[in-house]
Length: 182
Image (cartoon, rainbow, N blue to C red; front, side, top):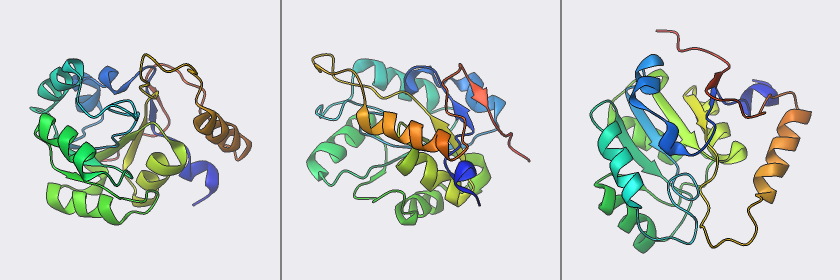
């Protein structure tokens, strides 16, 4: 698989994961979501799920299985967030390694093509999901409101490199690059 295909998300959502609706999930026939945690669900320095995130999980849960897979090593932080959302989780995933995502897929007992990898990073979340043949969804990072810098230098660098390699990452509302083949 070429780099531009490995780094190309299937769906780019404008805004945060909270814009991922049951309608979108059903449109792409997704039965499971593997969710990144840091800056996908909560700002990196926040240890609790917001009421909005809790409401989103309650809204999405009837339509799809949910599993958290984080590169973060903090059991206290990631475990606390997972428990507050009543979701199973793996930490220390070392994405783009596929090992813990595969473990989550086994636990979900779903075909890989029916599960989306959802995250804010191209070189970890999207790359890992594409390497497994998952549907990949790129969301904008959630940052702490007190953050002085609202830019994301690592993500901006990833977008630049991805576009040089041929991927199209320009955010457009619900842009799809490939469809699920059932």
